[in-house]
Length: 456
Ligand code: UQ1
Image 1: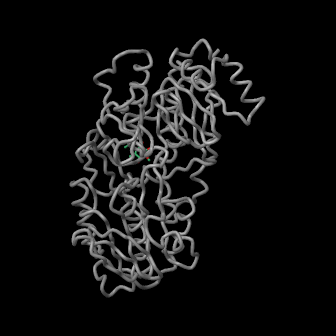
Image 2 (image 1 turned 45 degrees about the vertical axis):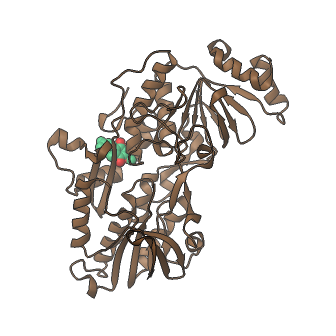
Image 3 (image 1 turned 120 degrees about the horizontal axis):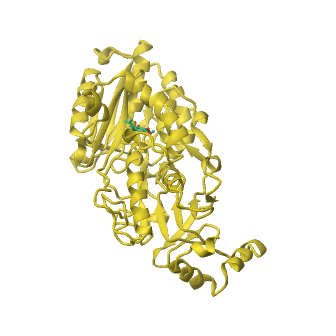
């Protein structure tokens, strides 16, 4: 079946690696002599089974244009996590277990799933090399493996996170998000510091969401008085590598107002470089990187993040190591049959699941046009849409939604004239109840386009 559907480029690519064998014999080789690496041929290979990968591959499948095993997902992970929910784990509102599913169970049986890592890309030959040495050839490649969390990028952080007695934690990982709420409950007095690094992170609002929930918890427990922080048992500081509370001026102004109103000390352009015992060392980037040391009793840390090595070292990457794609079409600037979205891509927007709701349909439409040998449609352009449901206290969310250039693009403002800068209870329920539900039941199945609603 697949033999008749393969394009000439793919056949050439397959032969260049394994010699002029029939495809059937290539497959036999794989089963009979597994020690030798094999070439497996598919139409579209999607590297990454995260939010972008699952959404895109299932949208492709739902077009009805593909047969069994035409579409491939490559990912070494055992589990798929709903990462936007980890903030709520940090606030004691959800368990990390309810936010994960076995990755295999989320992949449609009509797709081929290689539960393997990727060693490298050979885009000139339309080949991906898997961790086990097998080669996978493609007509179109979608590179969406996300980004890597680099715990070691802050000296002493891995040790502090692993120490069950330290009050150092992070909502950014499956292992560490479970520690967060316990540390908040344990702290009865002292200084709490919440950090955000300089450089790229997933969901740039999440570092302060963790803080706002903790502050509210301590306030309710009588341990923090926002109007009189100097006479409160607990003091709170937000230490961020950025010069402002948030990258979008409209929301940043509101969050800065909240910070002042609530008596939180702002340490701007302070980038955490080391943790040792109860001492945190920051690089003060406003003062030529001068080191500043602070004592803390509790610290919530957001680690450094960056592209995976197998992407960064590949011909697909830009200088910074992200898959170099056009901001509008999501197509690789270097290889016309390569595409990217989400965290791994160079798209200059905030890295969130909400962004994928807008990126995926554009990528899918453009990829299909390219596959049919047609010009891309000029209207199929991603505008940079992303969103950050910013939990500002238990029961309230400021729903930041914006596009390229930090320009607000608010769904409920355009429908109902509601200014989303105001934290609201309805948005909290969107974040806590609706988004996890629609994600699980529709989005990763390729049937949800965010503010554009359900698709067929
Ligand atoms: C969204 O669709 C989504 O995914 C299910 C989120 O969760 C991660 C979001 O945070 C947001 C904001 C959206 C966008 C949808 C609407 C209706 C604003």
